[in-house]
Length: 310
Image 1 (cartoon, rainbow, N blue to C red):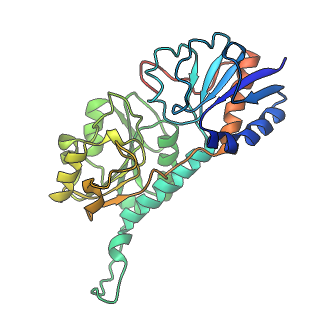
Image 2: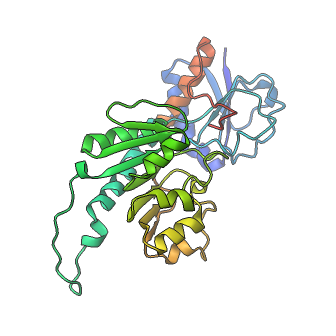
Image 3: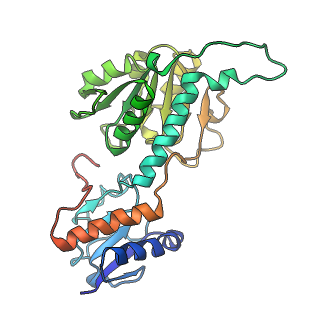
């Protein structure tokens, strides 16, 4: 039987994904019609981006699952018409990119690379940077991305603590959970990396109170979600020296508005949401594996818990 797979995303995404998806379907031995134009009553699976024009899932009575192209699902979990199984994207290519980006910025702040760059109008000031084993790094969020980041930082030699809302275990990592665990983790977070999902429970995880728990002169790296940080509280903490520097890749409004105070703050590094992007080839393999599972009657991978929001 030929499967009908609807690609519901922007046209430019179709140009990027159509061949990798078709190649992955062939490799999996699946006979499929992959298109952006299939009547709702004939659709078996939906490959989906939340900014698609498709927002009403009511007509898709035959559809077995919605397979998200994005790692984040906060823009779709509240859609009351979506009763179908929803799988988030866990792309090994994206995971690798996130690990590399986070590791680069952790090392940048750990070694003081920004400070050590010399110019001919500065004072020659050699110093001995600390070793990784002398630095505490805390990763907030222990999903696929957070776990992978913890493992690499641990391998480099950092003292690594991880925090999540529910109990987790990662070999060699001190794993904490719950509100008391968050406070304890932040109390030793010389460098904090934010990789939590965007949910009502995680909004403003870093606020005036929790920022003040961190060691004076700590660094913050946020490639997770913009709402994880109370912007006004962070700016105040930067101003009084509680936080030495913040490297931010995600924001509540993107692109970051031209008049936002982050642009002019010398203690803030702004990057344009580039830490990690889904890779078409590896993401297509993940999507097709879930289609194969659906056809074989096996459990889908990476199903979203609607109550938790991820």
